[in-house]
Image (cartoon, rainbow, N blue to C red; front, side):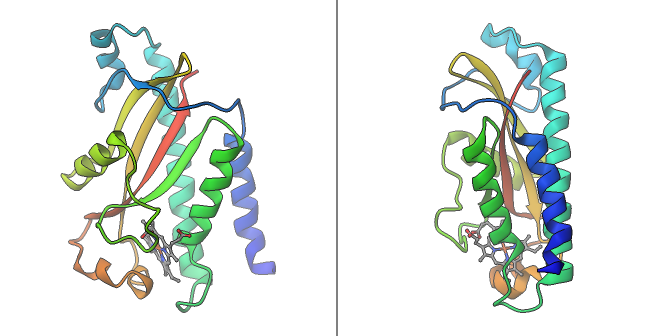
Amino acid sequence: MKKYCCLATMLIATIVLVALGEPDSRGTVQASDRNGAAADSQSGATHDKAAVERSRRLVQLLDNIFKQTVVLVTDKYVHDEDDFAAGSAAVLLFKNISEGGPHKVRLIDATGAPYEPENVPRDDFEKEGVKRLKAGAATYDEVVEQNGKPFLRSVTAVPVVMKKCIMCHAHYEDAKPGEPIGAISYTVPIE
Ligand code: HEC
């Protein structure tokens, strides 16, 4: 039990950060590209550029916390294949966060061979995002509208950061250094 306290504290901090707002449903893509704010004018949408930047910074913060947590848990607590994987913890955490509010997070595969068949890019945005990440982008995002409200969708690359990852994902051994084997997919309100 004790060993999970540290993780639990970090995760609670994260949940507090993201557990704001109200539920939403999927909507129409209005602007695209890493320069989503600039692209807004082309689509006729009037999203506040500063607000888009705030959402980008929120995604960066969440991304940093999540990735640091996965690495820390894998390093300190995962010793063999039967241990509860940080990947499993992340999938569960992201599911709970996504059910509780407007912030959606998913851990997805970028290799074509996921551990769990559900963890694959689902829609056009995630598919295009994984393609861009594999082509070398660190992040890919776009501004979308859901129920009349603006959201930032973003995917960030997950590379093989530790040898231990290969213990459970044998095919990660074939990945080139820095190549993304997965991605984290975010949807956060622009406000
Ligand atoms: C102890 C075994 C284990 C280790 C070590 C492990 N994973 Fe996983 N990983 C899993 C399991 C199990 C899942 C599926 C979780 C689920 O869907 O509930 C998973 C899921 C994933 C996914 C989502 C796509 C998929 O394959 O389902 C990614 C990406 C991922 N892991 C990356 C990593 C990285 C990067 C590391 C090293 C930091 C790592 N994993 C270490 C067991 C492991």
